[in-house]
Image 1 (cartoon, rainbow, N blue to C red):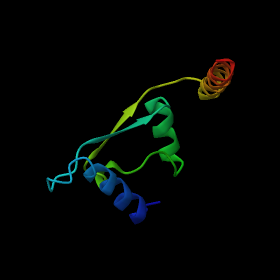
Image 2 (image 1 turned 180 degrees about the vertical axis):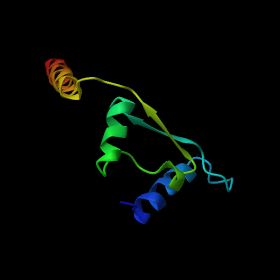
Image 3 (image 1 turned 180 degrees about the horizontal axis):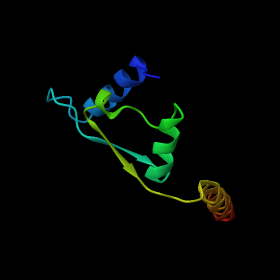
Image 4 (image 1 turned 90 degrees about the vertical axis):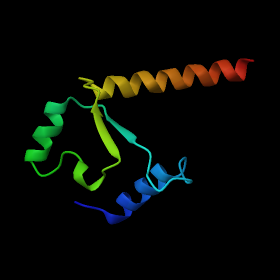
Length: 88
Protein backbone atom coordinates (compact mmCIF):
# COMPACT_ATOMS: atom_id res chain seq x y z
CA UNK A 1 0.00 0.00 0.00
CA UNK A 2 1.09 3.55 -0.67
CA UNK A 3 2.55 5.43 2.27
CA UNK A 4 2.74 9.23 2.03
CA UNK A 5 5.00 9.36 5.11
CA UNK A 6 7.55 7.03 3.45
CA UNK A 7 7.46 9.12 0.29
CA UNK A 8 8.05 12.33 2.25
CA UNK A 9 10.83 10.79 4.35
CA UNK A 10 12.77 9.49 1.34
CA UNK A 11 12.36 12.79 -0.48
CA UNK A 12 13.79 14.62 2.54
CA UNK A 13 16.72 12.17 2.69
CA UNK A 14 17.36 12.80 -1.01
CA UNK A 15 17.38 16.56 -0.38
CA UNK A 16 19.80 16.50 2.59
CA UNK A 17 23.13 16.53 0.71
CA UNK A 18 21.85 18.99 -1.89
CA UNK A 19 19.97 21.38 0.38
CA UNK A 20 21.36 24.28 -1.66
CA UNK A 21 19.54 23.08 -4.77
CA UNK A 22 15.82 22.55 -5.14
CA UNK A 23 16.36 19.22 -6.89
CA UNK A 24 16.75 16.03 -4.80
CA UNK A 25 19.74 13.80 -5.43
CA UNK A 26 19.16 10.37 -6.94
CA UNK A 27 18.84 7.55 -4.41
CA UNK A 28 19.29 3.85 -5.10
CA UNK A 29 17.30 1.10 -3.43
CA UNK A 30 18.89 -2.36 -3.60
CA UNK A 31 16.37 -5.20 -3.54
CA UNK A 32 18.33 -8.38 -2.86
CA UNK A 33 15.71 -10.64 -4.41
CA UNK A 34 15.79 -11.72 -8.03
CA UNK A 35 13.52 -9.46 -10.13
CA UNK A 36 11.37 -12.50 -10.99
CA UNK A 37 10.59 -13.08 -7.30
CA UNK A 38 9.59 -9.45 -6.83
CA UNK A 39 7.31 -9.61 -9.88
CA UNK A 40 5.71 -12.84 -8.60
CA UNK A 41 5.07 -11.14 -5.25
CA UNK A 42 3.52 -8.18 -7.09
CA UNK A 43 1.05 -10.55 -8.76
CA UNK A 44 0.08 -11.72 -5.26
CA UNK A 45 -0.54 -8.14 -4.07
CA UNK A 46 2.89 -7.53 -2.51
CA UNK A 47 6.12 -6.99 -4.42
CA UNK A 48 7.88 -3.63 -4.58
CA UNK A 49 7.12 0.04 -4.15
CA UNK A 50 5.57 1.83 -7.09
CA UNK A 51 8.61 3.67 -8.42
CA UNK A 52 6.36 6.32 -10.00
CA UNK A 53 5.78 7.67 -6.48
CA UNK A 54 9.54 8.10 -5.98
CA UNK A 55 10.92 9.95 -9.04
CA UNK A 56 14.33 10.39 -7.36
CA UNK A 57 14.72 6.67 -6.56
CA UNK A 58 16.01 3.83 -8.71
CA UNK A 59 15.56 0.16 -7.81
CA UNK A 60 18.39 -2.26 -8.48
CA UNK A 61 17.81 -6.00 -8.13
CA UNK A 62 20.81 -7.92 -6.73
CA UNK A 63 19.33 -11.39 -7.37
CA UNK A 64 20.58 -13.30 -4.33
CA UNK A 65 19.07 -16.75 -4.63
CA UNK A 66 19.18 -17.54 -0.92
CA UNK A 67 18.76 -14.51 1.32
CA UNK A 68 18.72 -16.73 4.42
CA UNK A 69 22.25 -17.97 3.68
CA UNK A 70 23.31 -14.36 3.17
CA UNK A 71 21.81 -13.35 6.50
CA UNK A 72 23.60 -16.22 8.27
CA UNK A 73 26.87 -15.24 6.59
CA UNK A 74 26.46 -11.60 7.62
CA UNK A 75 25.72 -12.66 11.21
CA UNK A 76 28.89 -14.79 11.31
CA UNK A 77 30.92 -11.89 9.88
CA UNK A 78 29.52 -9.54 12.53
CA UNK A 79 30.34 -11.99 15.34
CA UNK A 80 33.88 -12.51 14.05
CA UNK A 81 34.52 -8.78 13.69
CA UNK A 82 33.18 -8.15 17.19
CA UNK A 83 35.43 -10.88 18.61
CA UNK A 84 38.45 -9.41 16.79
CA UNK A 85 37.61 -5.95 18.16
CA UNK A 86 37.36 -7.24 21.75
CA UNK A 87 40.62 -9.20 21.37
CA UNK A 88 42.55 -6.02 20.50
